[in-house]
Image (tube, helix red, strand yellow):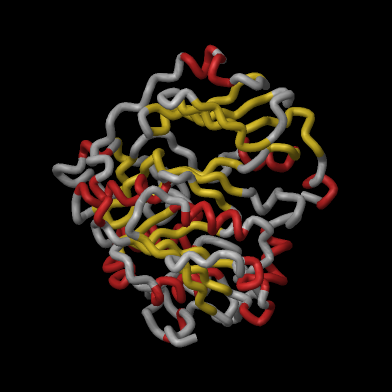
Length: 361
């Protein structure tokens, strides 16, 4: 797709809304209410019920298709039970994203109280990350450097700096809901076999044709039903957490339906067991992605489960279609220079200095 096609305004553009029917609040997330389409996240009692498309409007709460959405039922885990769990949120950046400060402030505004935020600066020589975040003095945030390029190395550096029982990941071009962290953590309380959780990532905007094209082909995962992802049958006692996920004929080798790195959480001890994110994968390598999916596959291979919760949500820029960056593949190359390392075997990488910066960096 050419740069010209990427920046072509869409005659079928959509406004994006969040409608909380319990609180009776309708919030315009982005776009123009006069756009011909509207995408609406419908929420009831703190749970996400549906993500529906309707005709453009400035009052989506009154649309028949919104009114007829059935309210989401209670989840199979105790909601709010994770309040005492210590978590660490990791956000990796090269400092060039114009949404970085807003993304950080959204994390610091979470209703979950027991957490810290580690921002990993993967281009510390530029000084951009620290410059953009200089106005944030919240002591829950720390900035660590990862000078060796690559998203996997940056994630690994963040893990080494994390102290939480649960480690949660998001991106510098995503704005998380204030209840996001609570929703990501609660399912872990259901069973020690819940090794990871994933949420939903909604589009930040649909102004351009390429953005609608991306969403029409699936976009980021946005399954609105709780799922249990596992190899084989759902373990006894966990059936109430959700329906068993259907990953397709190549599952669990392929895990794209499980979730995405912009909205995922893992137990720290599980991460230590299965090994770090593979430096041969992810932004900054020739693959330009896949480090999250590889990690999902490794976790599932242990026999543990991954729970998808639709109540943990964020809005995220589609970097491959956002005009400010033209494309993820184009923008990533100068920001995250490709790593030269290639995997020498099929064994998972180990927690060694080569997989991340040292804790002192």
